[in-house]
Length: 357
Image (cartoon, rainbow, N blue to C red; front, top):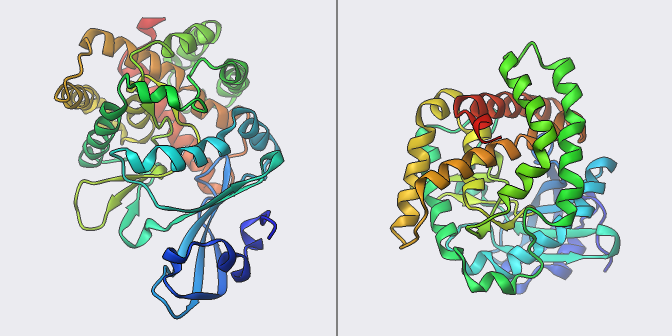
């Protein structure tokens, strides 16, 4: 049967055809209703919860569907970076063999031109998703750092990375071609429209970074190398309802081979409450460093601090993309953009990230 184009095109008949028998456990889907759960949170994909009416069996009452985004500018970048194929490969070759909790993959298929469907376990019955606008508490940030440390340590300088030939590095040609332009497209908007919401030193830092952005990008691609998630913002992280610290991650479209500190800088600079990040960023970095050191990994702390600052600068391209290049969606998307931009630039100033330029 042909792949659906939009979540609303998914039918009970199609789901009965593609879902594995061990998922439905003897049940037959007789009805589907679609609930958009990605608007204002996802940039590169349409994400929907499919609520299922099931006759018999003991399968799930809901699943999650991911499909390509419909905004032309976003889709163009997604296809150039190959992120849909990358996420499917992450589920096929990485997640199950790694110490990282994620949803079970039920079905994945991609066609020429970027059309794809990914069907995943719905985690919402056991987990609460984070909210990037609200921001993470210190306890949540510590749980995230701990989980990432285990994942990073497992893949640290591993020869198994060479088998993942579909996994790019931060300096891949497609990133060098796309990311500097994305950063620069946001710069005039930042200067014109955000000066009343950001201190002058943040605007000045953005302008200082402009001519050196390619240099910073290349510096972030140096070792030490592991497998990194690279989109560790709070909307992609789930916290167990039972109060345990075993957080789960979703959205592996941007995974890379690169410096692990990228994941730590990303979550702290865009998803941790401002006061928590300002007071505890270095303690969180030390916590991560201690965790990987416990796995026998040697990483000079002075180098780590330099790498952290470089990464914070590079990832200013994230919120800059939302003001200059991509459609951020509805009102929630606009609120997320503001929270992300203000946090990221405040953090860059707080840690004196400009000192590495």
